[in-house]
Image (cartoon, rainbow, N blue to C red; front, top):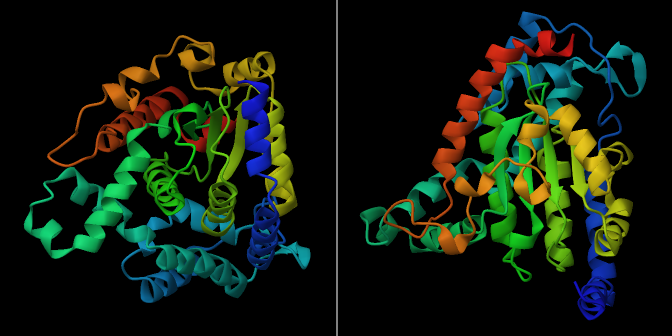
Length: 346
């Protein structure tokens, strides 16, 4: 990247209206911030208590309550109480936290995201498409965000956490922010549903050989989605290699992040990142992709959009359904290799 391009990006991220957007985002994130985000500890949660939580969620969110696995609900309920770490969180407090997540999902339309994929993968002349023109427009925008294959799940860590890969160089420099956030929600939910039993969080590895889009609203809205919709879901985000643009972006975002979330971001050079990936990925060095100096060929599954073919009759080129099937198969392989989450941690 030339110095002129770097200057252009930094200028775009430093405009006055960006400062206003950052202030507004900070207020929203502060309001949603969890005092005990990432707190460790494990108290007992009885079957009766789990039944009470499940019943309340089913009553309040009948169409989406199964999204939260028992393992995740238990991980939230079993943590120490921030106001008194010697005791477990009260059930009422746990319900409040879980309700906030479910309300956010309702607010952004998370439960309907996969229906958009089915719609845009079919003919735009189908009865459903004709009867829902606004939904079709939203679905087409989602497909555009997915088709560049800049965001996808592939493989697991040794601890059974699915790995979300971000390829910044494939993203449009001026993306449709709403569609990009919708794509993140769709992909995140797909990976969460494919987690092995007992696993509740995931890992992100970002190829930053090219910078992310120089659009502050995109970066800020992705961060807000992570904080409000996926608390305690991110185990670690590794980005490499780290140049001046990535450092500039992180300087913009760090003040917005809850303290424990900021600590999960690892900015590394390629040598250090390679060693981390060797230790972390299920098959070690052989799981490192070619675009990060390894041998694993992700492009056979997630090619550049130019080489991708339409999956169905519609405009979807990204192999969303194949991604899910591969992730399920990889989860089975992990379980055969490592057993349960508890066994993998021993």
